[in-house]
Image 1 (cartoon, rainbow, N blue to C red):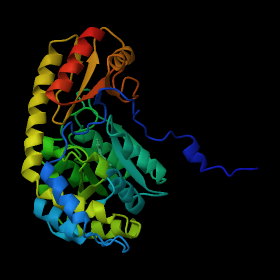
Image 2: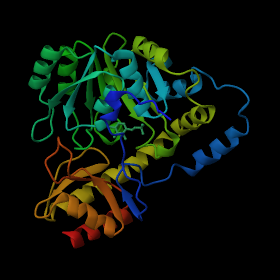
Image 3: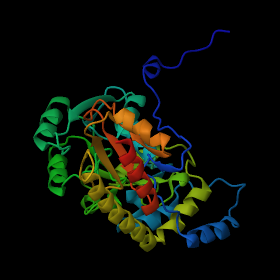
Length: 353
Ligand SMILES: *Cc1c(COP(=O)(O)O)cnc(C)c1O
C-alpha cells in the first residue's frame, strides 16, 4: 500500500509533548495541586441531570460567556470561549494569521505560540528577551517596524521564566503594533495586574485566560479570551460549529460562582511559592523571581539534565527545560505544589545536588 504523506512542513516539526511520567510528585505542567471546590462538584452533578444529550449544545455558549463577562466586567460579546486557551490561540492564528501573514514572539516564551503559528502556516518572527527575561520594548519596536507582524504574542507572567510584563510596556507595545496584540495571561491570577482592564472595542488587544491553572480544572479543557467585540466575531468564523460541549459550558459557568475559593487557592500557592523561592536561594542553584505558580532554576555545579533524572529517580517530576534553545543551558522549571509536595521536591533536590 502506498500511504499518503502529511504536509511536508509538519514532518519537520515535533508535536508538543510534556512527558506524562507516572511518579508520586508531579510538578511539571503547572497544574493546581488542589482539587476544585466540593460544592462545584455537587452543582455539576445535579446540573448534568438536566442536560438534553440528544441535542446540540448552545452554539453561542451564552450563559458561560455571560458568567465570564460578569467576572471581568465586560460584555458577553467581548468573550470568546474554546477548548483550552490553546484552542483560543489556534483560533487567533486561523483568523489573523495564515499564509502570507506573520506572528512575532519574544523568546524564551510559551512554545505553543510559535508552534500553533507554524501549524496554521503563519510565518514566525522571533525576537529575544533581555538576559533577565524582560521584554525590551525598543527591540519590539525594531522587530515590528521590520516585519509588520499581524499578531504579536506576549505572555504575562511569562512561561517558562515567571516574570510579568509591566503595564507600561504593554501599553507601549500596543501603541506601536500594527496588528493584533495577544497577551497570554494563563497565570494572570497569580500576578499583581491584568491587561483585561485595557481591553476596549477600539483597541486591538486580546487577553487569553484558562481554567487549567488557577481554577484547578486542567481536565476540563476550557479557556477564553477577553477582547474587542469585532475580534470575537472574527474568531467565531473559524470555530467549528458547537465546538464547546454542553458539559463544559455548564462546568465553566458553575465554576465562576466559586471565584472566592479560587482566589484562596491562588493565595496559598503564592505563599508556597515564596517559601520555595527562599529555600532554593539557599541551595547551589540560581533561581529567578516569579509571579506565577512555578519557578525557573538552574543548578550551578551539576548539569540540568542530570539533576532532572536524579529528581525522577526520587519520584519527583519537574519540567526538563535544560536543552531549550532560548533558555540558558541547564534550567529546570518546577511547579509550586502543596507544602508536602514542595518539601518532597526540596529534599530530592538536595540529595541530587
Ligand atoms: C498552561 C498554559 C496555557 C494553557 O493552555 P490550556 O489549553 O488552557 O490548558 C496557555 N498559555 C500558557 C502560557 C500556559 O502556560
